[in-house]
Length: 190
Image (tube, rainbow, N blue to C red):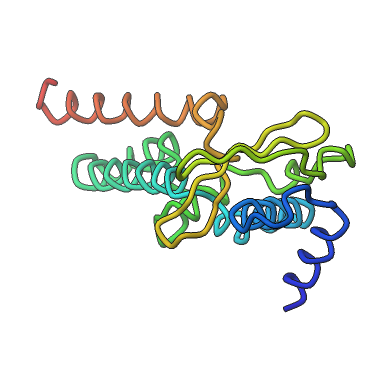
């Protein structure tokens, strides 16, 4: 209840220009929830506000890590396993091995925060095309939203650019290298 009250207050302060259009109001609310979660560094809340494509991306990558972990466990001597498991980022997933945990490990809580520019917190316009929306702030920043299966609008903030992060590039390269090296070591030859 406390977070919802703060979101309502943020919306009131933002002076949304989309009054009267329920879809734009929903997107404006989703935007303000993202800003509040960024301000607080609440990774669990940010995960909930993240779109289905981003979640699927992290779930897929987590599954690749878990599959590689199983391959390492099943194929390599115990003394070689720690090095290989470290290379694929197995420790990033914790016990559950899911996308949420990978998201929390990849998104650096110390580096996330809401925008400093007050104009970046005020909605200038929202353009809706089907199940996709682009919100532009008064500072000119844009945030893309998509409508989730449950009907709520979710942010694509973390999907844009995630694959270009040096750590993600290295992780994907390491997964490919480990799969290849294990297949060569066990005599598969592929």
